[in-house]
Image (cartoon, rainbow, N blue to C red; front, side, top):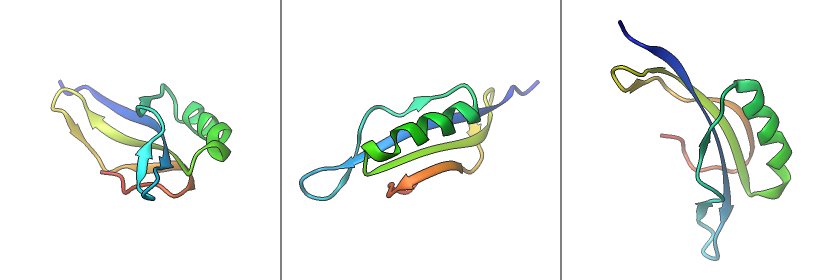
Length: 80
């Protein structure tokens, strides 16, 4: 039986000297969408871009749906 779930991620980005986006820290998985949005809001003024996003997942097959942005502040690279 497929194991359905949701992947919820928080990521932040800064710009390097060449103006390219670089991760401010390793993107981390968050346990709830509300917590991801809350944490993203708290760090919004500290980085060039902050995003909290989720996607449906079939963990047994390793398949993921399209990303859904829960919160975004500033600029971010395109989500894959």
